[in-house]
Image (cartoon, rainbow, N blue to C red; front, side):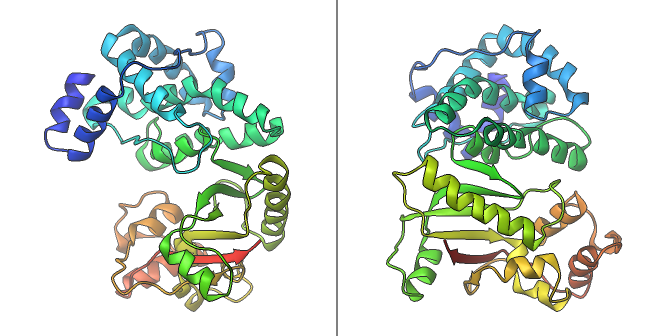
Length: 333
């Protein structure tokens, strides 16, 4: 495995820097423990890993632990993930691994997260976080494996950086929405300050995320999630003060209002936020809404279906020569 990574690192500076960081980190400070083969299926199912992936992952466990270089990498990745557990913004790099590794590469981070699982669950217990919240939060791993299968036709974790947030205690599923313990960036800090709040860059905020496969984004469901978040973080993180929630998403692109009625769930979701203006140098990213709406960000624009209002909005805008941008907004808690 390491030979493949080193070869790929010759033309990938990010991968090279990641390997160098792992090598310079020294010996892991936490013992690597993975569930036994007989216990692993139940653990995977608790994480909502799709049933069709379970047997293959159980078989892959022996390969991961049975090869010195793969075990070396797993130990150091798990150790890096657990460093400063619970501290927002401290997550390590978790790059997508080269295609040459096949399922060993696409599924490698499942084992990193399995190694972190008992540690993050202990962190949850210390914070008094209810078991049902912890379970639904960590089950996002299985949801993302379903997203990977929809997009790529096979098993794997599409964006390991994302799931690292869950296994570091930084992000929680509270009803329809997810809330990440985060800090204000320059753009949102400026927007909040203009509204008269005494907050600045690096002050705490909750970053709102909208997962797929969770039903409609209805106003009632979002109201409930925000109410849950207010109480959850006040109770379980009393040493942290959260005055604002922010969101960075294509769902906040104001152009969507051209195509959707005022009572559409997406428009009602936008109405929650004070939107920050788009930067003059901000680049469009048309692949993001295509990926979220149609399941494959590489689909040709002229072949995008028009079955729903959102599909028609995204596809028709692109076919007319338009572009989509990430939107940025906030609201006071």
